[in-house]
Length: 114
Length: 113
Figure (cartoon, rainbow over the protein chains, first blue to last red):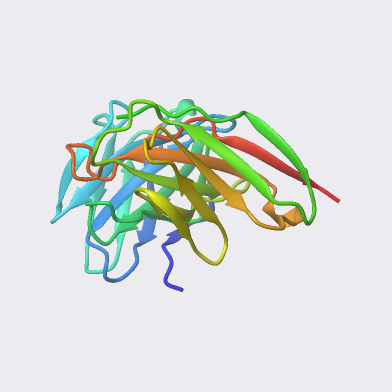
């Protein structure tokens, strides 16, 4: 079964450092997303991406965050200057379309900011 | 988007059928109902999606009454490995919220031996 893959599975970084989380969405999918889940809290939407541009972003996705599809297979989330409160599990997801289509999630990248 | 209400937790024993009901009184005409499962430190995993009546796949059934104001996820013969958080989500990806899923707290299902 096709799956969304994410790297790294776990990253520890110092406050103020830049972090890039990588994702390989399911190959025939056109819509890509990032969500995050702070420990013990709800899964929260960050951003959706289609046709090489952001479709929608939440209030969490401020200027410190950016997304990119650098090639035909990867989808990345960059946090420019990490803060302690960025510590969370970050999930990449993808879907074939957006009209009633199922969104498939990766296993997550656990980011710890110290 | 329609808000959903589901029990915070449920307990069951191995081999039993588990039914988790979700209320979504303000569901809109175009809304689908989707259930996800999440294990600790893992991504949400799609279980089943439906619009009306009954949907069944290899892992679960989804029952949706005619008024669509609620839905019930049915897990037949649960095992210990079904212990997880189950989320009911309602939304229309055709709206402005392209792929924006709203997760609540979900239902923590614990299966005991």
